Image (cartoon, rainbow, N blue to C red):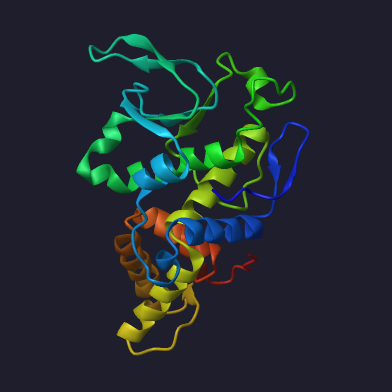
Length: 255
């Protein structure tokens, strides 16, 4: 695995720009499955987690409201789960275990399953030091169970929202880097070009609110990309917006 080279805060959270995370995502894909950088396709998340990162995947019922979809164990410990009969239970976990809520095993949830798995893998890659049991300044110090980091199901990585603490910063970093690995920038650019070739047009930025055609393209392009990379339409839309392939009329854009 290629290590992330960056600065860290006192609490050992990476201090890094999104552009640097984008570059890191490309290096990871180039190391694990280099063909996917030029030939758009679906990265095998299970193999990435198990063989590339050396993690163990376990499926359990994690929460009643599905707010938490994944858990990463940075050390040996115990995590709260829900038993098969619907009662609160505890599960002993070993370092390097990723637990994913079994509700995501449904076929319709496959894109969410893949994103959640990659998100937890990213936590393992870049946030282990923050959750080390001997880190007195890290987020582990404020958790009742200091061995576990969790992923909430409704998060995103909209860059305009400022992180209020280390937890939010790590969640944003994990979301952003996950998207970069699942939908690598070079491959997405090729999908972008293919989309416009199909319509006999030169590739250009799509600006919502300027024409009926652009509004249609702003809906169709994410759907097209989502199928190629096996991610959700929402994830594909956010990815295209982050790369300023799709913008809103009258809005400035900075990447």
